[in-house]
Image (cartoon, rainbow, N blue to C red; front, side):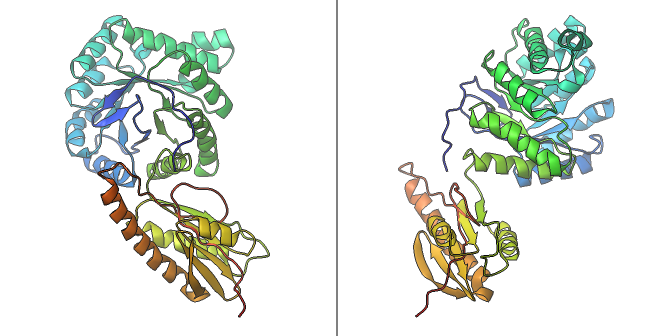
Length: 397
């Protein structure tokens, strides 16, 4: 699925091997929860995040021991590493010398203009970008007094000041975030900032909370801005295993057509019309598909004759189930009736067949720039490349 909106034009920076801004794909970031000086534990988490789809990983560097651990983490991490630093020019310089691929700091926290220049000069010499991370929870007291509270305008004023501290030393390899725990304020802040700078923007709802609330807040805040073309890299902040942040971030990008990878499962919410347990079927399909190495595709799992046949037919692969059996569809064509106890087995076999076809087409299209993506759908709704499993009534002979 292709995004149906134009992305805001920004200048491009590079975080190690990952381009950010300037039309580059929106990247996903997360942050380790380990103590950085525990190199083994930190590397295990970095590798896990990278395996799940994180493009960039940030590590906290509040102490000297954390900075001393950075060279090995950078060397063995496998993805670009950003050092999160506050207040200390010494730790910032140690991180740069360790070869990190980016810094996250607020220049204003360093106070001494000489220290800001020292970090800016060292980062420029090494082509290391800096993210200015403005946060509603750590605004300058003067801004709070001026605006009464951490408003969107206060966040942007802070960002403007921080940008100036670096740009006065000729440093423009910057990306910026203006995070707020209030979704409406967060959206307003990024909209305002997008009108003031062409620097790439890092999106996030700060302190979004546990997955129960944080996923909704992040999807609305980040998703709204991305749908307006605003945003070049994202982090979903959850009070949870950081792997969950990466999974949610990927799903946000896939839903908006900004990532074309993995499967899109479309499944109906079920109701009294369903002829089998749609919840169990959808979960079984999802669990099985996650273990398969499939190209992007849409799969649909449907539970009745109303929307089932249409969704199943429209997906790359789908099932429309009726009493005792379901009708299997593949690439818009009816394959045949399958007993309920064979639905998942038949669907997975067809997914493997379609996957092989997609890969073959992709190889052929490589020379001509074609797109061999597919889609997976479970239930009702539109998707990107997909597979569908839906329920339709069996035909009587």
